[in-house]
Length: 437
Ligand code: SF4
Image (cartoon, rainbow, N blue to C red; front, side):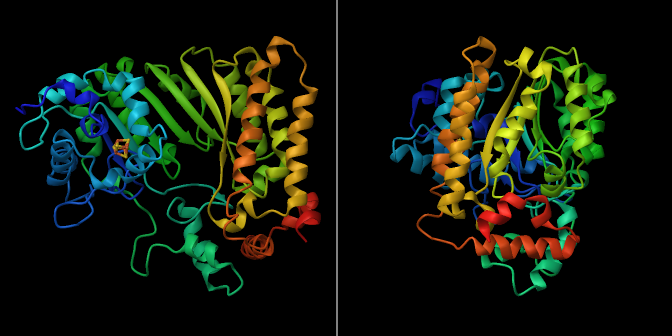
C-alpha cells in the first residue's frame, strides 16, 4: 500500500485516468486516455495488447505502474505532454476537466488511490474503457484513411501510385508499411472480452469507436454477456458510429444498459452524403433518424457528428435544417444535438485552404440563418448550435494560415479520388467547383 492518500487529488500532477481507464488505439496500442501519447515500457517499446499480451499486462505492466508512481511522486509523465503544455498556457486541460467533473466512473478514485501498491500496481480492474475496435469499416469516407477503414486499404495503395496527389495526402494515406496487416483485429486475438466479462462488476463506462465498432462480432458478444450477467444496468455505453448497422434489435439490446451516448457521423444531404461517406445511403440515414425518433428509451443521447471539410462547408445550414426537420429533434432538444467537428488533416480537404471568397459565403450563410431564427423558445437550441458553428468556423478558417496552401491541392486530390471511384465531384458539388476552379 502506498503512503499516498487521496489528498493527491489536488496535486497538479495527478490524473484519474491511469487509475480508472484502459484506452487503446485501433491497433491495440495502449495510451492513458485519448489525449495522451502512446504508453512505452522502460525499454521504449510501445505497450500493446494482443495474442501474446493480455490486458492485465498493460493495466498492471511496468509502464502503467511507472506512470502511477510518477504521478504519485508529484510529476506528470511524458505521455501527458498535451495536458502539460495546455496547463502551462493556462488552458483547462482534459486532466483538470475530468478531475473537476468527477465522472461516475471515477467516483471511487479515493479508494483506488489507497489500494495502489508501492510499485504502482492496482488490484482493481478499470472502471472505464476507451476501445477502438480495429479498422474494419464498410465505408470509404473521402477524409478517412487505411488506418481507420479497411475499405481504404486498396484504394489508398492505388492513390499512392499517382504522382498527382498532394504530399499531405500522401502522408495521410501511408499504411501500414509493405508487410503490415490490412485489418487490425487485436480485440479478437486478445483476452479483451474474457477480461471484461470476468471484471464486469467494475465496469461503469464502455466507449467504442473504430473503424466501425458495430461490425465487430466480439462487441455484440460482450454486450450480450454483460446483459446475461446482470452487469448492464450499471454500465453507460458510448459510441462513435456510422450508424449503418443499427437495427431495432440493436436498440432492444442497448435498452438493457444504464444509458447510451450515440455519436452518429453525418456529413451531407442526399448524394453529397453518399459521395463524402462512400458506401452510405442517405435514405438509410433518414430511416435511422426515424427509428431513433420512435424509440421510447429515455436514457439515450444522440449527437450528430458533422465533420466540417471542403466538400460540405457550403452546406452546413442545409444539414442543420435537415436535422431540425425531424419533429423529435425539436421535441427533445436535451437528448439530441449536433456536434460541429472539423477536419485538420489531410490539409488538402481542410476548409482552412479555401479562397477568401468561399469562406465569406460560408460565414454569410451562418449569419443569415441566425437572422432567420425567430425568438420562439423552441429555436433556442438551434440558435446555440448556429452560434457555436459561427465561432468554430472563424477559428478553423485560420487553420494552415502559417502554411498557405493553394486550393488546387484540393482539386488535385478530389480528381484523384474520382479516378479510383469512377465518380464526378464537379457534378455533385457544382457551387464548390465554381469557387475553387
Ligand atoms: S494528464 Fe492529460 S494526457 Fe495524461 S492521462 Fe490525464 S488527461 Fe490524459
